[in-house]
Length: 179
Image (tube, rainbow, N blue to C red):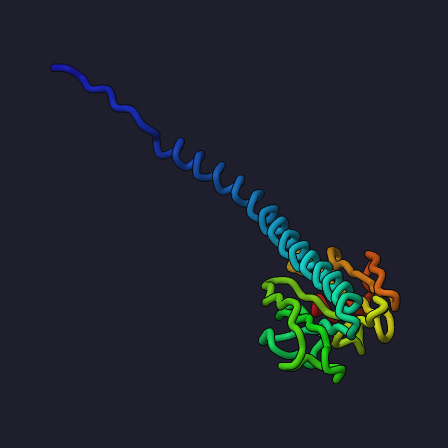
């Protein structure tokens, strides 16, 4: 009679391996979620910076005011301070201070999930004039994602159309992060 030698894992070895995989997953998943949130916020921020630059440049090029505003449908401006659902830019060729069929569309950015983007109170749109300036008061764009209020960021645009990064106010963080 010959004995066969069996190889494999014992139940204890298997349980230890599963526990180690569980611990590693518990460490890696939150880091992955945080990295994903940071990437989504950066993507939205880059899209907004690109839209602001394109709208400002188009105002000078076409010698007409250019509008940038939140949009739910990519066709018209939404009456909202929330930009994460999408935004649109167009040259206001008929000078009626709204985006309609007669205007030249520049861009549309669709919705971004898990990131909130709000403008400061009173700024439901950005209007660039042909000289590149921003009509109206300074505008603050506040970003907040699932990482929470401590990771909220802001971009501030002055009347000349210049941008700078800043810490958002407590009021802006509360609104953007819904706290």
